[in-house]
Length: 417
Image 1 (cartoon, rainbow, N blue to C red):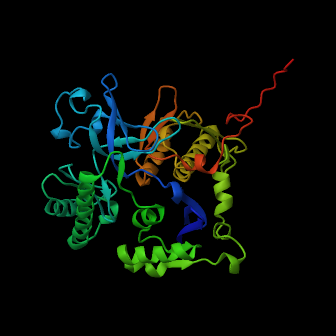
Image 2 (cartoon, rainbow, N blue to C red):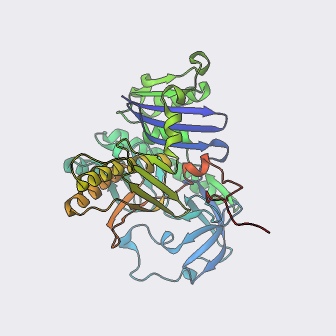
Image 3 (cartoon, one colour):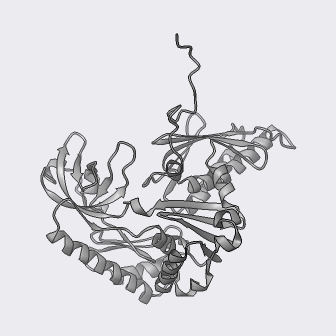
């Protein structure tokens, strides 16, 4: 049984996905300050830095947005110049520019923006100027990849680009064509607004978490969808009627007053979330993970702890590492970790065991909704991977920095005279 639970409390919406009773995905958003990734703005170039091949653009968010030269050049690699020009040849201070947010402001950094526009639909992603058709790597059958690629080529016009999402597998041309037409009209509206809008101003706001969850996460393998907010339940029902009417009967309203408990408590989510965000996570075998996050880097240490195994040391270490790989993949999704991730697995003598552990994590990475790349073992025996970072992760949204220790988890023991 696979369930999606949506807990609404005022402006906050939290979404959890359970496989059986186990939490496998979690995301949250404050609707009053909803995510900016995907929003389109008309901005004004404030400063151009040739030494960094970048520009800063005022899009009306307080902090200027960062625009790198690669996000100004044509999105199709075959249509880019052999040598990159200086960014001073492409933009000037005071120039007005339409851009899309690709990374939200984080810490002291402003948003990162691009001119490679992408508008996601239910079945595909529409790109106004990409000039190619792509197919999700998660669609494995070559015959199906060829079929929907051909449909994409028939549907796109001129310089348009299309990426067929995993959900497009098995869909007919009529459904895919309707998606393209809707997104094409959306882009036309953005262009028309950009002609009269004064910079800086917002031209398009990406869908909120509820719509994104229905569009991106609610697939045919979800057996039940529970909401505990009556108004959001009505909105979700309308979205399902629009996008996937055959799933409407899977939508259920949870009455917390009648049940005398919260939706997340009823399905054991609260306890699992609390455990997932600890700095030390216990494994079922008795091993443990020690988790340490900074703004750009996450380090995970794997320990055998109380697990002693039953055969020999190599077997004990291998089993602990395999279990840790599964748990780390799950926690990366729940905590929505992005950036560079370094995992210090327990040392293994057997090279084939090292390969099995890396392959296990690679298999999980392929199923991740967020782009995740496993690079392999470093010379120091650490496993290195990256995960796309677009928003502040859930840990920073759920937790506040401790005013006493400043987030270090340590208290000075020095004597003050």
